[in-house]
Each structure stands twice: as structure tokens, then as C-alpha cells.
Image (cartoon, rainbow over all chains, first blue to last red; front, side):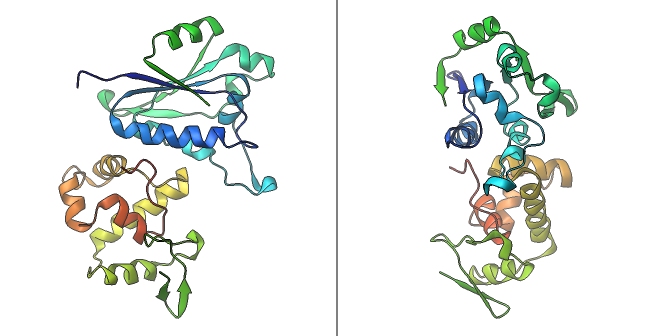
Length: 135
Length: 110
């Protein structure tokens, strides 16, 4: 298919308290059905969306963290996380979920989906996109 | 339209999906299949059980192409194709099998 576009979904908000994170995830999963080049960006409080060990029992909401682990099945294998956003919140890569995908072209080897990039690199990646959607 | 399973009345949504996922039991699938004039075989149950495990792990009902790929990987290439899955679930493997498995309609199902 010649008209594949590059779509990036930019996640800026904490996972619960607003509907943005969950809505973004739903749109991402739906968009995956159209065989486009999809990537996700996690910046600002958006980095909290993919933190390890999230528990939602106390707020009576469904924990949608496990869904991020299914993204690889939908061929969504590029999750860019901004280094500065982690730093500003005292977080490191170790605080994030170990999200992986299986590379079909490499005998289903498991590879990490998360790429930590600098603010400058994130701007460059965004610049390469055809469509940016901010949540 | 609610369904009757083992003397219990279970609520469903307008498309026939179980309203409360926790109310699922194997007979739910049997009753739903009977309404579609379908007899469930071991092959059907392989898919239904797979879907329930997938949902347990990832909290979503997989889109049909994800299901197809995963079935192919786990149960062999001869089963990982839509022809095989449609032969089991003629109303669409994603929608119909998820319904029997007590899952919501697949996310990203177009």
C-alpha cells in the first residue's frame, strides 16, 4: 500500500482523573485496523500512563494498564517516552512497564517497545509525522 | 434481551453481549450458540478459552486480525486463518466468539 501515513498519538495527561488516556488508547487500537504507521508519545504527566504497578482498586476504576502490553499484537511497536518528562518527575525507565513486542521478521524475538528520547529528539520524531493527535 | 442460563436470568446489551462479564459460565456460551443454531465443538472451545485468557491478561477483546495471528501461533498455521475461524463462527470470529466468551465487543472491530 503506497499511501501509508505516519500517525503519532501524543499522551500528555495522567491516566486517571480524566478520560484522555483511555480515549487515546481506544483510538490507537481502532486506528491499528487501518494498516498505518502508528507510534505513541508519552510526555509531561503522560509518562504516568505506562508506570509499573498501577493499582486502581482505591478509585473504583478499571485498570487499563494491561492493555499497553497488547499493543505489540496490534503492530504498535514504537512508544516514545521523553527523558525530560521522566526526570522532572523523578522517574527512570525502571519505573515504567516492560512493554515488549514480538518481531515477526526475527523469529518472534521479544523486543522492547519503549524508546526513551530527549526533548529535542521527540521534536524531530514529531516533525516526521503526517498526523499528530494530542490527548 | 436477557438470556436464561441454568435458571438464572442474565442481562445482555442490545447486541447480545453479556452486560456483566463476571456472570459468565461455560453454559452461557452453549445457550448463546443454541440461539444461533450452533453446536459447540472442542474447536469452538479452543477459541473461546483463548479469548478468555487473552482478556484476563490484557483486559481487552482482541481485534479479529490479532485473534487470527495469535491462534496461528498457538494452534498452528492451518487454524490461524480467517477461513478456519469463519467456519467455526460464521457471524464473524471476533464478534461471535467474544460474545460466547462473555467478553465485550472487540476494541477496534470495524
